[in-house]
Length: 255
Image 1: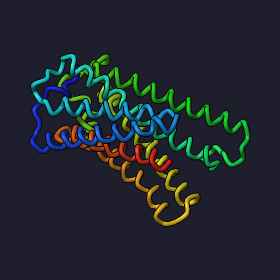
Image 2: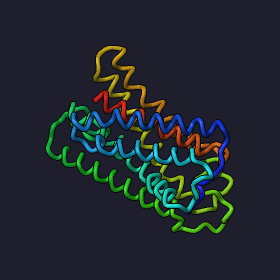
Image 3: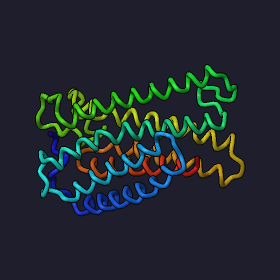
Image 4: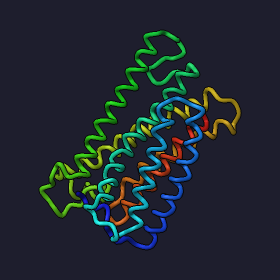
C-alpha cells in the first residue's frame, strides 16, 4: 500500500491534523441533527465523510507509531477512497434538490416549467452523477491499494498535487490519484456559481444573498489544496477537503 500512513511530520503539520480532526468531529455532530429533519441522501453521506476525514487525520497524528501496511492504515485507504465521491454526490444532490424544490432553473433543467419529463431528466442527472462518483471510488481503490503498479517506484503517488504531477506526468497511477480531485474541483466550482446565482435571483435582502456566496471560497480552498508538492500536500489537501465539507454542511443549514 502507498505510504501515506507511518511517516514523520513537521510540528505545524501535527497541529493542523489535530485541528482538522477536531473540526471534522464538530461537523459530524452538527450533521447528525439534520438526519431528523431531512430525508435526502446528503444527510447520510456527509457524516460518513466527516468520520472518514477525522479518522484519517487522527491516524496521521500518530505518525510513525502506525505502520503503513497495518489494518489501521488499510482503513485509512478505504476511508480516503470514499471522501471525494461522497462529497461530490452530496454537494450535487443538495444543489439539485434545492432548485427542484423551489422550482428554479438548474442549468438545462427548467424546473420552473413543472413538466414530468423535466423531473425524469433530473432523476437521470442524479444517477449519472452517482455513477461518476462510483467510478471515482473505484479509481481511488485502485490507486490507494496499488492495484496499478507504477513503473517508477520512487514516485510518491497520493502524496503530491498538480505541481508534483507536472514533474512526473508520465506516471499513470499519479494521474489516477489526481483525477478525482480534479473532477471534484470542476463540479464544486460550477455548483458554487449555481448557488450564487440562486442567492442573487431568488433570495431577498443583502445579508441573505451573501450567505449563498460562502460556498465559493470553500470550493476554491479545495482546488488550491490540490496544487502543492509533496512537502505540504497532505496538509493542504486535507485542509481543502475540510473547507469544502464545511461549505456543503452550511448548504444543508441554508436549505
